[in-house]
View 1 (cartoon, rainbow, N blue to C red):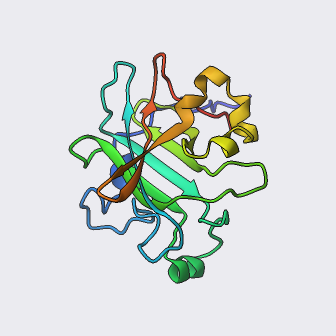
View 2 (view 1 turned 60 degrees about the vertical axis):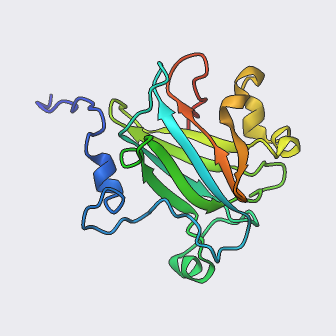
Length: 196
C-alpha cells in the first residue's frame, strides 16, 4: 500500500483574476485575452455585454473572473490566430470584476449568429471566483431571439420557470446596443449553471 494520499481540494484565488487578466489590473504582463472580443472592424452588430456577479444577498462580487466564448455573426468559431488578425474578431474574452467601480464585467463584442441549425445565438460563459472549488459554466441567450430560444435544445432542458436566468436584456442608450446579464450565485433567482 502506498503512503501517498490524494491532495485535498482548495478554493480558487485570491490571485487568479490578476494572473489571468493582468493588463486589466495594470500589471506589466500581456493578457492572453481581454474584454475586447471584437474590434470595430469586425463584421456584425457591435454590442456591449454588461453585468455583475452577485451573491445570495444581491451584493456585487469584486473578485470574479468571467471568460466568454462565442461564434461570429455567421455562427462560426475562430479557428486560428491568422483569422483573428484578419477579421478583428477574437471569439474569446476575459474580464475581472475588480477594476470597475461597480464591480461589473464589460465586454466589447458583436452579437453572435447561430452556430448550428436549431440552436439559438448564445455566448458561453466560464466563471471563476474565490470560494469555488471548480469553475462554473453557463450560457447567455438574448431576449430579442425569442423564436430561436424556443427551439434551442439546451435552453429547452432548463425548467421553464428558470430559463429567464439565462436571458440577457437588450438596452439601447445613445445609439449603443448593450445586453445586461447578471450572474446570481444563490437565491431564488440563481443563475442556471450547466453540468459539462
